[in-house]
Image (cartoon, rainbow, N blue to C red; front, side):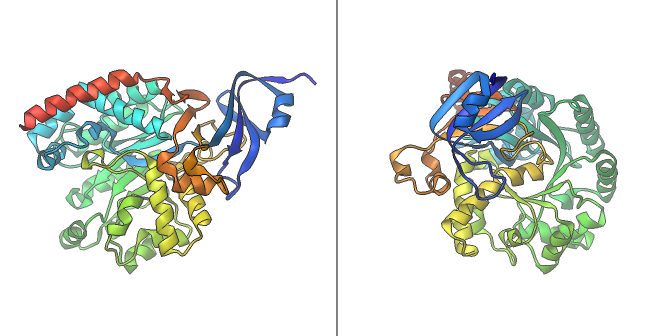
Length: 441
């Protein structure tokens, strides 16, 4: 039988498909054509059935779906590690003139976003959700780098570099959505923070658009006791109750940074089944009456994000995966292996569900886009290799991602970026570091 010619074939030591759950395949291959997965089969069969225009032999690697970061701030990446945290916070305050100046600087936004995307690609992320996106600047960068993304336009009442008022924010955001409606790698969402500062009329208008357009909404909610109490005092409802009253707890709604839940909140979330985005490394510091992690025992979909880089967090989701797995062992008394699989699902298929892409990405299944990463798993800290999944999760910080693809197109090959110039990005970061440090002096 004549071998079938296809775009790409990956011969792998280990394949972690994520779906079906808790499965690991040894000596298997993934056949890819037209950006999508044709078949997962044994390497012996693959070599007889297919011939790839390109072939990668990954003898010491684990192949898995690319990681999905469902909440990050790539546009502030250049502020990570800045010594004067007070000034850094002022820059992020939309009412501050320095913030408007910095976040209106196209070069700052471009360089910051490119550096963040490079860091994400090199640590296994193939899809990310940005809050308060700078719009067309970031859309162009995402398109040129080939990474998949959900870009959230800000909606608030006060002026900033992103808009003049609620009407202006909505107009700009919906125009951005229309401009990129046909881009298969890009979605546009609306981002809300501190809903206690948003008028009822604005939420009503947003709800109308969300229902009419199936517009995803990402909302930072219940992040502090103060915001919960202020919302209750001002509107007579806790944030979640107010959102529900306004018709904004929709199937597409993504709730971020929820850290103060009472029984009423928990019951509401079990009913509405919204997507929750958590920061696993921060969960141990929460003082909830009910922890969001407890909702994992229900059918609530929980994914993970990396929070704000300017607050000295990093964009490597493997750290979050490890933290989530360790937390599950303690709080849910799971075995290390079960906890590892659960954490990996949160960073892959659960993230795809959060962003409404679970029919397209998040697992290695026939017909889905080939959004994949390969990780070297043959170092001393992986040995003896009793279970590749457990070793990957609990030795994650030392497991280098060597290859990355989105829709079958390479973003990283043998640890080198394919669509970004790493040396130029490093120099850019150094230049900005000097500039910002001098301004703080």
